[in-house]
Image (cartoon, rainbow, N blue to C red; front, top):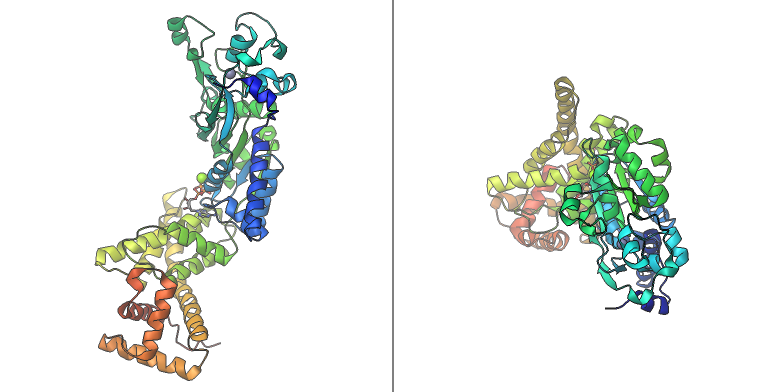
Length: 482
Ligand SMILES: Nc1ncnc2c1ncn2[C@@H]1O[C@H](COP(=O)(O)OP(=O)(O)OP(=O)(O)O)[C@@H](O)[C@H]1O
Ligand SMILES: [Mg+2]
Ligand SMILES: [Zn+2]
């Protein structure tokens, strides 16, 4: 087993979690850039689960580089939790720790006087290696430690050891964060110096890594105060104990807009606030849909319906701007949900490809399912708003998406030849009546569809006719009265 002396010999540098994070991010960005990614592509690559507008990405990255603890604010379903998870994933997981330490102490805390002052080791390690008894009042002096006698191990930060997650709610009491000395266990073991009597709380568990606090504003004030102390001093005192334990971590917290007022002022001051709203960038919203639908699907989801979903929700966001109660209806979650619901309708019909009606019903279900309201009346009112919206806008969103699809085919394959375009539409309508996808232009359309859709169920002539029917049904070939 290696010992702390070897770390000193190798001149290992002590690191706070935020420094480890900064290094990891810089290295990743450099890698991505070296592989030809643009700066925004490189920044997006840091957060594979969470697709964000370029300016938001920049804020997130700069705030992480600045080493700040973060408060991610935004409407429901904008990706706050998912961003927090991505940030934890970025954290380098391998660290040196003192063997058997209940809070994975940094060995340098014990043997590097300057570091030991900034980030003191836990009372158990002090007792074991520096002769400081839990009961006596001896001061910890790193010089009294023999580094060769401190066994160290390379460990992997993981849940409970360098990572902890708190779901904010009124039932999360201070003890959940501070941990406690288990008195009945103490009676059993009889030795206050035994780590067995310690029940490490969340902030201790997070030591050396990341603490994720979802919905921080929902925590009771007292619990928020524990967090504040940990952020200010990197220490925590367990309940029923007079000893302090290290609690050095990077905090990534989230809050909905509604709960912001419930966050303690001084706590909020220690968190760099970052707004993650819904993306403005259409292409990014589209990627969210594609990511959400990844994996085996029970029915194929044609491109045009994916696009239509994004247009529909973008329109909703525009029309409900400011109405917080209705924001959630247009969340990123809803983007995905609409198509999941639509897929269920296709499944119920025994169809292998979604049609426009499946999609319209999916949109209604997906959006209605996200209505939050304080009372029955406002629920019914909001439901009426959603139903009226879908009734009016679904067709438009569909048409928008269908026109995009058609324009691309028209430009790329038919080379904007108007005559060819007209003949294609006439032939395809004929083919539909016959139920047989034959003819040169239809063949080219089928090839195009196959390349666009990336789904084996949309790779033949019949499927191409199905896509054509979607386009036609949405009015892609109508001359719009402009
Ligand atoms: N920006 C995004 N990029 C990719 N997927 C997203 C994004 N936002 C939301 N999603 C999808 O929606 C789901 C819900 O997102 P998430 O839980 O991160 O939202 P949230 O902002 O934490 O919501 P809440 O306020 O309700 O807790 C995610 O699992 C993901 O599938
Ligand atoms: Mg969340
Ligand atoms: Zn320790």
